[in-house]
Length: 329
Ligand code: GDP
Ligand code: MG
Image (cartoon, rainbow, N blue to C red; front, top):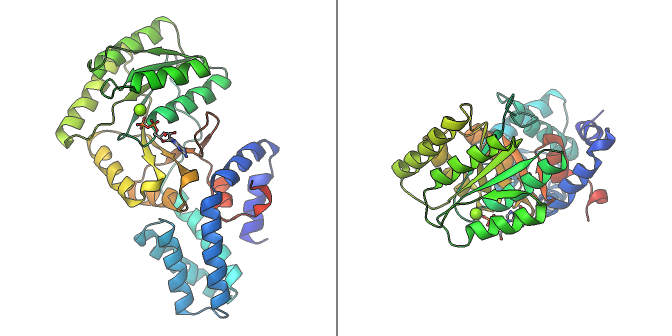
């Protein structure tokens, strides 16, 4: 069986993945269209597979934001494997390439399949990232998802810096039907987070999700602020935060990765929420993030609505990138 058949079976084999597959297909349609257009041009141009073919396949990966070093590694492995299989067929070579993309993602990375829930007491999720990347929206979507799973949720409006940020979280919260703890504008985010965790503990809340300010600041200030938030959390819940998610905007490409490196240098991150995947045609960024940062993408944002957040699923993602149009909108 070819790799694409295996991938398709993995994605569609279990009925419960269907809604998710659909979500990935729709959300990744820009990326898929771009990927497939380039590929069919490449196939039309190259009747036979030579150095130029591989070099253009490499360019295609780079144009999808896979990153230069990973693209080169994938192409190298693809060449070797196509020699082993004695194939000159562009379609087969393309399948081998996608298989190598998958292999590279799984290399040296344990991908958590669920949230790291506290054994007892509230699970605390801290969400960080620069302004405008989609933190507040991602928090609302995550709250919606976890609430639908039957968990009690409390949101903490730790972005006390930006005018309107608290109201924005409030609007989402009332739509979803969850409570928000907030402090006065320009108050210390740590004190709001302290209040929030104390209330969550008292009310026996299952999951507390803390929003933070996304202002750009110096590395030293960012480190001090995040350290303080961690210290304050641990006064109430020693194992907090159970998850520390960095939100990245997929449309920012390599600039997003530079942003992530800056955060990773000053604080521990347990995962990435990659937003606006529906707004980019460069879906390869997921692979670059893993390769360059070694941090797994845990959720991806596939639109602006409450439902448009999906737990990351490698096979559904790859199928969304290369799969057939039959499930796209
Ligand atoms: P924050 O400043 O990091 O809290 O960012 P916001 O949550 O306020 O989001 C900034 C903008 O990005 C808003 O207009 C959101 O609707 C938009 N946005 C967030 N996530 C997504 C997504 O997955 N897809 C799309 N298309 N837009 C998104
Ligand atoms: Mg915000």
